[in-house]
Length: 528
Image (tube, rainbow, N blue to C red; front, side):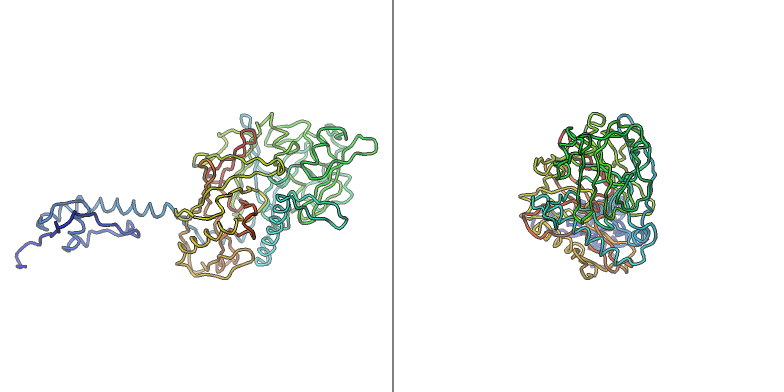
């Protein structure tokens, strides 16, 4: 080439010109401005926008800088957006700080009534309200407890009830265990505030009552029926007493004069509540419900985290949902908060979208009905994706899965979990591995990182409903220094077991239960 001649862009006409593929890792910080001075860059640029060949580069330079550069920037941003639409940015340091401080237990919070719906503040309940001195021991106990609850649920679902030492069957409705991440709300019982655990896997609501012959320690004063003019005993020959069999697994027991009905409910860890059925006015989110049937516990045993009892949000006649259908239409929803200190979610009774703060539309899926498993909420899981890549697994052919507010870690059947694990590890392969911990077998060492890009996890349900797991629900910090951070999902032992969507993966989601229309909905929501 003569020194005074202008460079000419050369194009091959032997075959149709193709637009070059933009690299998938192109980002907005990669601009072509400096490289446009090179003939090879001109060829790339002209091919991308379809400019004619044999054009002097000096005449094309101005056009490329003024016209092509914005195109490159937009294209780069678009490619980067496509890439990152299947990823979440996780702040390792922020979660480290949040994991050190656990929310203090509380007996108060915002409650209000709004156009036929009642809103209650929802928080996590822990056994301690101070810094955990032995974090490793805490995490180990939590996962052991969670595994016990899952075993309890699987036994209940398969109708394989274990026997106690006396040979009587023990109903395994809930399986609440020490230091699990239970969520609590405050309700009024006979005008007295009571903090109770929220459990979608139970039906009977109960609180400890005076005179308590055997009670565990609780934060609120015990409820005293004799001091409430609105309290009434439930008689033996009542529909409520007959309903105990379905709600607790144990039939009601009549008193000597038939004027009282005794209940007994047991849990998977040996905890139990026994007492009398009663009726009382309760206050939930500013709404008053007269004649609510609940258990007045006179003999109670277990580690319930200092709460007064339990709120049953299951599906039988004695559940809070069923008893308030006339008032709230058989609909309730919640948004579970994260583990950050002071964060608070909400439990909403009734279907009033005005009190929701969801950032995406609510998508609904059919609620599977199983008369033999009345307390539980089953869905049909049809697919999953990791970072936009759809998983292929035999387990999706029979995708019945339970959604539960009391289980912590999501459990998947082996074929689905192995597909999830393989794809997640493939996409997250740039980070160093760490040893497994308890039921968590996919772990990484993130101690050297301030932020990491995490593949999005999406669950798909029958009818097109979707739930995208919040970034705070993907990893569980086993070590505070982030040297052992594990995928917060685990495998079941057998393919014919029932998967469970745990509360750790439900954080920052508005989950709507519509028992009348028999459907469950999901939407993303920042719970606070």
